[in-house]
Amino acid sequence: MSVTLRRPKGRTCERCGRVEQWNDQVDSWEITDDAAGSVYCIHEWDINGQFVPYDSDE
Image 1: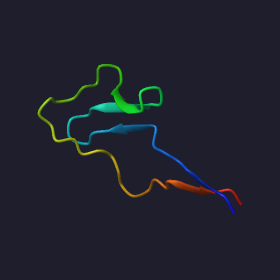
Image 2: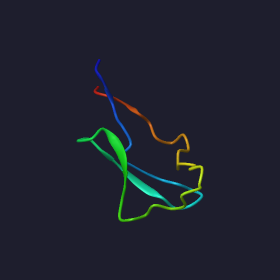
Image 3: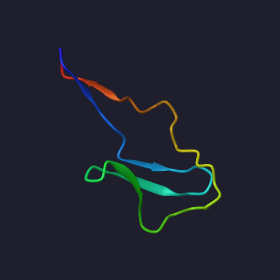
Image 4: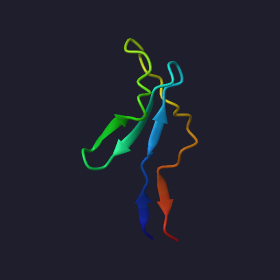
């Protein structure tokens, strides 16, 4: 049995609306389309427990 680790590709702050996507080339999150949100926001990302990071290759 093989297991594959999945990573989220995007995230959105629930407080200020900042939108980021993962960039594999720089191995970091980047702001998309000038959606920077608030500079002073303590970002609360849309992580709700529904994302399943592991896929079974069965």
